[in-house]
Length: 389
Image (cartoon, rainbow, N blue to C red; front, side, top):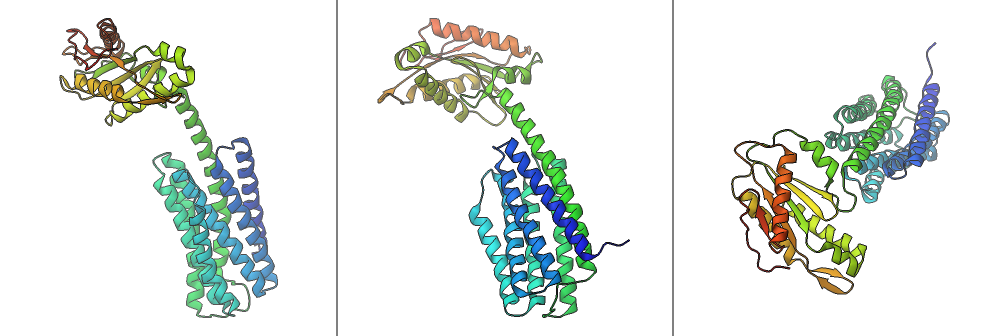
């Protein structure tokens, strides 16, 4: 037997409410995923709007229509905000409020003026625009996880199209005053699409956030928590034992007298020095280069597509930039230096472990030669520094 309109509304309300409860439960487990909370708030508003609209269907009074518009537009604007938050990592309360208020004005004013037909046209178009805008946020974030994100964007787009059809049928009907809730094939189709869309969006959203959580765990496993650089495991996983190529150089850095910094100023000061050096290392990296903290005060930089002599110059620039840093520690400005070993690309390609070992030997030659200098593996030709520590 065919379901009537109220039964479809009830099904949509229940399915959306279940999705809101699921989203809230997921957020309670992973509080850092605040986008789940934002989406939950949006869904709760939409659910409330659905039940108010159900009351309007049975008793078409303007105040119920206005209540439905306010809840729907606030809800769909908040769902847009969740999409924006997913893309940027920031919640745009101003963007949510602006879109919700604009949609409300175009729908509420005609309803209060007695033109309920015009109000529902504006309502459907406003919701469609909010859904299209939400789809766009996910489309822009598609590189993170193409399959589920493209699915979410497609479902938001299809749901938006169903609201456009509702508006188109009302426009073609040409009545600005209805005296009742709209009732036509487009409304029935839109309800069916919304039920399917909400179910699909919910499943894909939860899968996407699970994927994102797993990706974050993978990233945490290869990231040094103090400096934000890759850790030793990551750089060895990246290069392993495969040949490095004749244009790839490996540079090893070791901060001079780092133990004395910890002894004199404490470990917090030492951590600050490590972060400052990591910042200089990152600032001098090109796209495609790999910077990592090997452990303690030792760092590595892998330079790709490097011509002879460029690796030594890059190492010297980093050494000089760090030497010039004034690091505020306990009310005084601390200056530190770094020793550097460079293993440039060879005509006979070596694996990463061999190049790292060669750079390490050059580094210890720099330490023996007085620190605060760059030494080249093999030839051990030093690039002199301005001062030695």
